[in-house]
Amino acid sequence: MQSLPNSLAPNSPAPVAMRPSASPKGHGKPARCRTANALSVIRRSDVNLAVWRRRLPAGISGQCAQLAEQDWPSFQLATTPDEVTADLAAALPSRWNAGPLFDDIVHLVTVYADILGCTAIRLRLDSMSGDGCRFFHVDHVGLRLLCTYRGAGTQWLPDGAVTRPALGRGDNDAVLSDPRRIQMLRAGHVALLKGEAWPGNRGRGLVHRSPPADPSGARRLLLCLDHDDH
Image 1 (cartoon, rainbow, N blue to C red):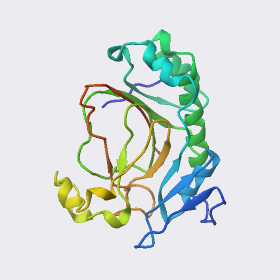
Image 2: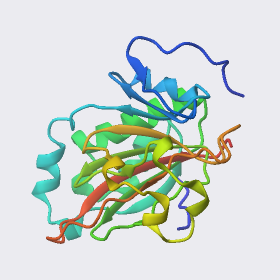
Image 3: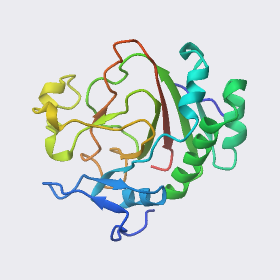
Image 4: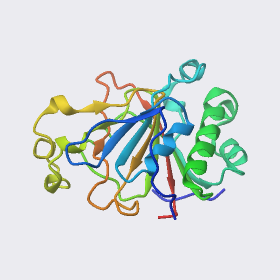
């Protein structure tokens, strides 16, 4: 385990389980997926978001509730599908290194690596009470996996709702003229987001942000997976 500081297949028609919605610009489509395998639709050049809209796996909510929020883990590590079980056990507090949350993270690392065909994975588990990245932005990465285990999920924008020249100015109103266009992931959803570094995707990365902080101060628990291939 290494602590970290803070050639793709040709396009193919989407299987029945993958249903990209229409996009006025002909690209940047979101795809709703019914299975983990269906997430591979993200490899299509016209799709920049794939979401497996699953329920939060059984037992994770209860596991989080058993420990005080201040004891929820936050860490980053470099791992591989073959080493993630041992690496995760070493990184997590002892009371977290078994059970449904542990098993699900290991599973998602395998799903992510299989879709990308890569082995070098950067894993981050964040426990946060603030609103994180509150401005709409794009990530300068290849392909990022996000899964919220507790709290509100990531907010994202359809491509046709975005004023891209306004990104990076710290002005959400300039990026999005109609707040009704904001979409939100739910706890348990597994999302693959294309960033600016994905081959051929410059200027088309998915625009998103962290959700507003919970007024009660309750924390969110978020898994983020990245890779080094691109």
